[in-house]
Structure formats: structure tokens, C-alpha cells
Image (cartoon, rainbow, N blue to C red; front, side, top):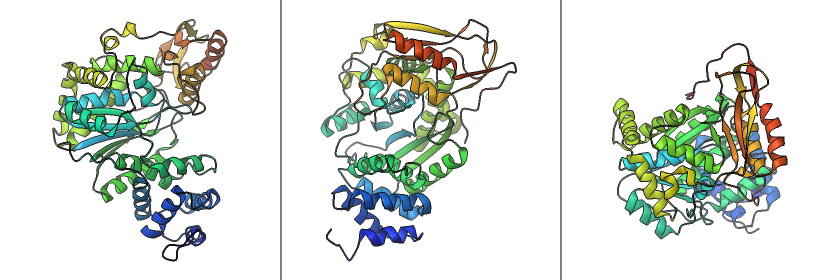
Length: 436
């Protein structure tokens, strides 16, 4: 390829292989060259592997983040008054927090603008959940995106094709070269999307446990700390939480099922863990925005749910993006899967553990998720968990209910789901929802 300022991909790869710090120019050169197709896959794969083993400094990671963010169009939200906030979760099972958090903070007058992804593997995607609401549009023009943010203070959309193209290309390469688990590469991927989306403040929820990509607290802490350093380095407010994913969040896993559970929480009801996390994150954003502080921030968040203002804002959001609001008031109007099957226990005792990752995969095989990008979602299917860690269960009592569309798949899912539960004679306390 043509050289720029005497740079060669080979020399940059060797420099990182030897554990040396790369300059901002060298990193920008690599990212630009790879995005434009001038640097081949095999050289970028070698560089990713060098990063995997040698790591990157905080400055290098920040430079990489900004190079990825600048690889495509960067959304300018400056025409919208006040601070704009975004939220990112590193992926979990049953995580419908965005559907609650966005309307909650927007109801407090804090702008919430989020570009979300689709589900892949064992994790669900916010875009898929939203599209299970009849008519809801997640593909918006930039003009529509800005208009909704100005008019109602909230917009939830899918990521546009010209946003961070380097990240899409790099992730696909990392996925097939064994370099996904690099903390600097994960951090730059996460933060580049948030920065390119125009947010002034970011709440980062790093999931930890068997159902998360980060299996240990130590690696989750490293990721969270690095994301904070990147954010501060480019003038963004960042608040991070490490939260448990050793069991699914809430009781619903599956798109329509999760939307219905989110509606319950927006009405001040629903599962305790989803409600608690929504309030905690809501209070954190209100603090970052300077709207309220300490206990008063959590009290304000609670009031927005109890008063119905957060739910009203969700209705505004759905209406603004073309969705049918009738099912929001009467959730029985949502489509229902044709087959419902209770999975009953053959053992009495207390729930000791639930394999969250496997629950997510089972829901995916029912049609609620994708094993491949081209798979088609069935929004009706999924799983409702009746028992979670610490709950007592008697023989013949339902552990969960499967919502499916195929008798054979439902029968297979029932057997697999039964093996997800560990039951013991001793009662265990549920794991703490917030680890750090």
C-alpha cells in the first residue's frame, strides 16, 4: 500500500508485538487504512493479536477509540439544548433496562439519545425488543433522530450504517481470530460508538457472571476503569456499574415478554431486581445531569415511576416512532405465542443457581434471538421464569413457562431448561444485584 509519513503496517505490528507504545498517528493510520481496505485482514489480525497479548496504555486506547469514532459520520447533538445522555450494557439475559431508563430520565427533563444493537448469541437486543411493538420504527434519518430528541427528549434507534464503520469491520475480524476478549479492544469498541453518537454523558453497565461476557469481577473492573479513563480523556461524563448476571435479570426473556415486563416496571410494579436497577441508573444519570443528588435523585426517580410520568414518556416515544400505543395500555393486545408449556420441577428445595447463558441460548433457539445475523426473530416466543435464586420450590411446581411456536422445539427447550436449575436443601441468599 502507499506509505504515509513513512509508516508501514509491518513496522507498527512489530512495535506493538514488542510491547512498545504506539503514537496517535500510527493508530489513526492503521484504523483508516483498514477501514478503507488498504490494509489487509491478515495484517490487522496480527496487530489485534499483538494487542491481545501486549495490551495498550490508557492513551493508546483513547487514541484507538477516537480513530474508530472518526472512521465514519459523527452525530452532532449540539443543536439540542442541555446535556445528552446515553447508556450501554455489555450484554445480558433479560436486560430490558433501556426501555425503562430512557423514558424515566426523559420524564425528568434530561435528554436521552441511544443507538442500540440487535441481539446475537445468548444476549437480547434493544432494537429487537422495540420492534416487537407493532409499527415501531428503529431506522430513523438524522433529521428524525434530532427532531424526536428536541420534541420529546428521547430517541431510541438502531445504529446507522455510516456510524463507526471501523468498529463493524474490526469486530468481525476479532470474532474469527480469537481476539474478542481483549479489554482495550472491547473498551474502544464500546466507547467509540457512544462518542460517535454524540452523548455528553454515558452510563455503563458492565455485566459480570456466567451469563455475561465478563465472567469475573477483576476483568469487569478493568474494563469499567478503562472506559472511565477514555471518557474523561475526551471530555465525557461517565458513570459505571458492575452488576450481576449469574441469573437472568427479571423474569421475562424474549422480546414481547420483556416489553410487557418493562411496561409493568414503568407503572411502578414488576420484578424487584429490574425496578431496583432502573432506579439506581436513573438516579445516577440525574446526578450526572445536575438535576438531583444523593437520596433526592433516587426519590425523584421513584416519583417519576409512581406518578406514571415515566410511562407517559414511553407512550410518547412509541407514538413518535410510529408504534401502536394501544398494547401499552392493554398488554393482552400483544401477540401471544401459540404454545405455552410449564416446566415443572421433579425435586423440592431451594433454587441454588440458574445458568443464565444457557437460558438465553434456549430462548434464542425458540426464535427469540439469533445464532446468525440473518436469522429471523419471532417476537412472541421466550421464557417466563417463576423461580429465581433463593426461592423455595415444591415437586411438580413450575420453574418456568416456555412460550413457543413449534411442539418439538418447545419439548426440547423444556428438557434443557430443567437442567439450567440447581436445587439444594439449603436456602441461599440471592446474589447482590450491584457488585461495585
